[in-house]
Length: 86
Image (cartoon, rainbow, N blue to C red; front, side, top):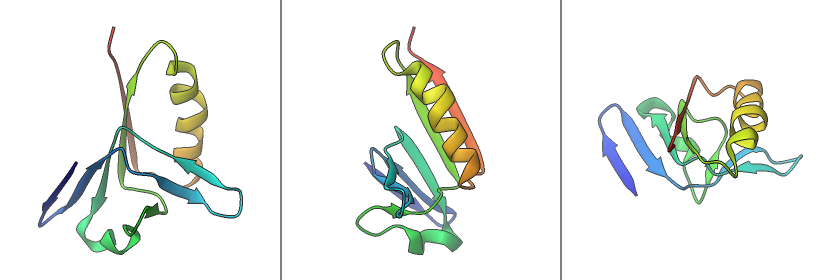
């Protein structure tokens, strides 16, 4: 899914390369990249999106809340949200 507006682009289930050298690649459930940064979207998103959202499930909640949030902060994601489906 992709939605494009004058303010930026929303995407779902797109690979995000946070660190190419470390092979750190994540796949947030939803992400947003601001209009002035759209150049980071190519075959994947190369670098930190402006916003990511994760749908938390029992099987992945710890990984999403701990590991992925730490990586998002470390690599400069401006906003991160998580929502439980329970």
